[in-house]
Amino acid sequence: MKNYLIILLPMVSGILFSQNVGIGTISPTEMLEVNGSVAVGTSVYVNPNTYTATPSGFDVLAVDPQSAIVNGKVMKVETLYTPIIIQPYSISNIYRDDLNNLDLQIPSDKYMVAITNFEAVPSTSNSSQPNSGIYSNTTVKGHFVIRTFESGGTWRVNIGYPTLNTQYTSGRYTYNFDVILLSKRFFKVLNESVTTYNLNGDISGDAGTAPSGI
Image (cartoon, rainbow, N blue to C red; front, side):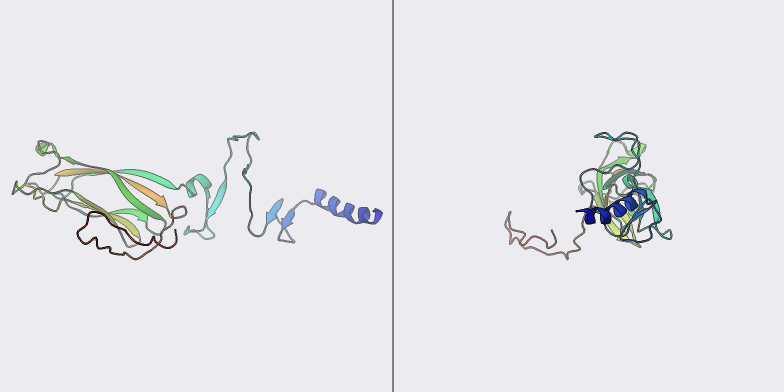
């Protein structure tokens, strides 16, 4: 027993009084430096004002590995890892009803996008027909077609009314909509190829095997 005490005491003393502690490194430059992965339990507090069940007044910082800045850009975690972002848009003075290619400047390698809360507001001079427009053939009716697509590394929006033939070349509509951004850090993209299912004239069917990777 005495031999064990003689061996352990210098080790404990070295840990208590060492200026820097390293895990996975023999030359730490910080008070605690870890070289490798860290598994954390249920709670993590970084410089909180008060150590309570719901601490407040502290920031957790992280480095964005996808940043173009050399060695990454330091950001707050709530900014870097926000899973869902909603951004409203209002597009006016469009040529007729055609919005062929609106570049949202949102990088497609980092986000998936979806459009919701779409609204087509007519110009004041045509307010009597809020969503049907002015037709050369009033017997033809249709609907707005909205889609998002990737081009040049960013997300684009295409909105139009295929059967609409307006009398005005500009200012016919204002398009209001929300873009929902889903961070690819949280939401997985399967990159599965499109599979076609033939229902053979039935009103119900089976889509077959679920996509792999879910």
